[in-house]
Every structure is written in C-alpha cells, then in structure tokens.
Length: 194
Image: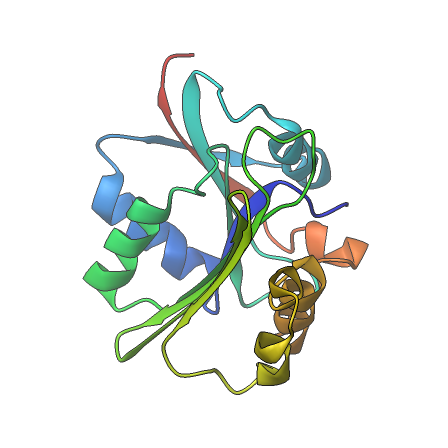
C-alpha cells in the first residue's frame, strides 16, 4: 500500500489491551463492531474521504508484529486528541505519524512524528507553508538519525522515507504488504450519522 496522505498511531501493546481502554473511555459514545474481512477493511479505510459524515477508526494488529496495535482513523489528524486522552488516562505509550506529500491532497505538505510515554515525549515536524519549516522538541529516541536534522534543505530533515525508516526500526515495516494484514479480527469504532 502506498503511504501518502495518512495518519497512523502505533501502540506497542496487544490489541485487546488497547481495545479495552477505548471501550472503557468512550464506550457510551461510540459503537464497536468486529470485522472479519481484514485486508479489504484496511484498504477501504485508506481510501475513505476525510470528510466522511461518520467519524470512524479501526484497530488492527499487523501480522508482521502481532503483539502491537495500529489505529487508523478516517479524519486527517488521526483522532490525536482521543489518542492523547487515552494514553494519559491509562499510561499508554504510543507513536503517531502523519505523511501528507501528495499535491492532490487538501492538506499542506507535511510530515509529523510523535512519541508519547508517561515520562517522555518527542515531536518532529516538517511542513511547507509556503516555505519549509522544521521543528523538533524533546530528547532524540534511540533509533533516530539526528544527522538528518542538520541537512541544509529543511524538507530533507524529516520526510516520508525517514519516517518509514524509523517505523521499520521499531518493528513496523509499512512498506511490507504483511504489515497491512491483521493477525486478529479488526475492531471498528464509529460515531456520527450513518
């Protein structure tokens, strides 16, 4: 699957833990259903319009890293406020990425990498508005190649290739088709008009 115009959140814990935290925190406001057709469901989320009338997100566990959980929402920011709320409430560690580098996108070109744990936070951001801007905050993580951040051309300091490299070093190879196959059933949470 081509990784463009996407926001994903990666939890380095089992899907049942993440699912139960979401149910506990937002169960009254959202409905949840299990999905059996794994591959088509993940692809349909990727192809959905971001202005869909119903807010939905999907939890899946990639076959390539089955003891972890991926969250994929149909809104541009990947439902970052909900993720932060749940992470803080349950001391849940996560990584979040967004890549918008398609000229057809309604969003400005940008790449974002965020890490959160109870004791540490790390932000990397590179975007064009109209000039390229690079921002980093927090101590670098063990897998980061900080020489990238010294590049003269700012758009080369954080880009799609670097984010994919970082995810791969964490065990999530998003360029491998096996990543997009779930090792368990999928869980879809939805809210809004049908």
